[in-house]
Amino acid sequence: MSSLTLRNIHKNFGNTAVLSGIDLDVADGEFAVIVGPSGCGKSTLLRTIAGLEDLDEGTVTIGESDVTNLPPSKRGIAMVFQSYALYPHMTVYENMSFGMKIAGSSAEEIDRAVRTAAETLGLTALLDRKPKELSGGERQRAAIGRATVRRPSIFLFDEPLSNLDASLRVKMRHEFVRLHETLETTMIYVTHDQVEAMTLADRIVVLRDGRIEQTGSPHELYTYPANRFVAGFIGSPAMNFLAGSVVETRLAQTIVRLASGTTIQVKVGSGELSPDSPVTLGIRPEHLTTGGDHNLVETEIKFVEPLGSHSYVYLETLDADEPLIFRASGDFRGAKGDKLAVGISANNCHLFGEDGKVL
Image (cartoon, rainbow, N blue to C red; front, top):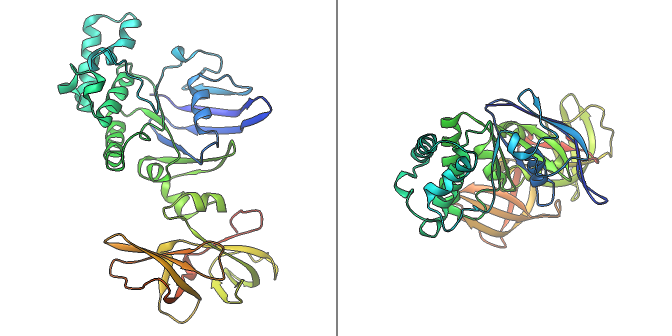
């Protein structure tokens, strides 16, 4: 196993800056997930770690070794791509053993490594099959097995589940967790799916426009987002946002006036906020309530999404540009066009300033 240290990573394609000053530490044995929207630089960052892209500036250190100028084969890493890239004319056994054979390993050493990896990944019964005879999940496990036999110090995964259907993605997420627990190897996983990030990661790295917005555990990012971007990206459905302005602040309480004139008292904010300062109030769907007589926002139901154990109710209001999403119980009986007053939990609000940073 090895740690990873990135310092001042810069990468440009022509005049376009793709990575701009990335600093990141991944601990030995950690499962780190890099997440962000399409085009934010996730895959490019992974490729710079692998040595598949040359840096314009910065250093990559694996363990105690500076590998910035080393080729991929000398870095002690294994990478699994979005496409499985299995050789179609080879069996699973031959695909998994190919890299070791090229490296000159003995037949005995190859057989031992392949069969050990196959047992870990549940591939033993599939070793004689060719890729066309495998399901999508089996192909993905074969691709992981091919990487595993090399006993790398760091695994790199570039959106490995994006080609699978929804139910298989869930199953494979569990497989990745089990694999990490079994191998105890440092893993760096790239995805645009924040649900994958939340369920897999020891630590999440949120990337936007080639810069790190925030790093932390899934709980930290969900509960204490550093800015509006992270708050809106982490969590499904996303956090609700309502535009307003400060009426007054006292101690750890702030009174915010929304666009409709409704005032909301929240237990967050800074005493440095001056009256009339523009702010954005954030509240997650599960922290909206019905009933009560304060912090109420008048809304109209636009759509109800029943999901069995609970329902998501989409609400139109003068106080938000986008529909508010309210997580209701599974027996919610409201219908499109109904009026609904929802309460905003004062203890679960977030306030963001004009610069998007949390207050």
